[in-house]
Image (cartoon, rainbow, N blue to C red):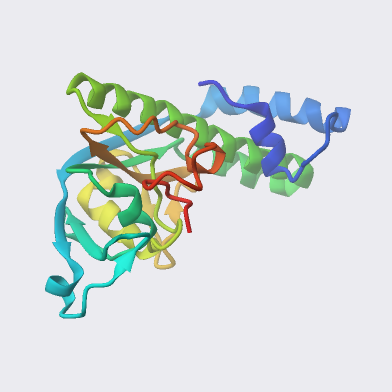
Length: 234
């Protein structure tokens, strides 16, 4: 997989620095090479229909407005989503992809190994693992988008639990619905942390409208403040 070196540097806390320390740069290269040899990427995704309901009908409260649109809620795979960022992102979608990816246990094992003898290397391992997990998620995202396009449909930017008002608690639903322990070897702790830690869950809306959404997401799109489907619009 192609891993963006700038992403690794960002996870290490480098911002606005053109040239990083030569020793750290060498550590990044060595760690990335070692990590690529040891990771075992896996993924799972399923598609579900989205049901839309007026909030007044679902909760008995008066209908208001959110970002200029009727205050509605939606549900998929037994998960209810109230008005907010995710509903705004999914507006107009008829289906949704639930996805989960992981790099396997290798990144965690490497971090634990280096924590004993080289904390800087352990820190770099954490950053490299995080960037690799995002890179793997991007690759799976591309696979899903291609599958959607074959049906003549379009994908919205992915949206992960814990982002905006999509609660982290929904991780329990991902674990159950995608059968993550069996399918990709990912389990969830009581505090909703995934093991292996270099794992990501997300949803992707499916629509018949082409909104020109980019894989990198709303945060880097120059239409993020005006697009009605933006996940970062306030």
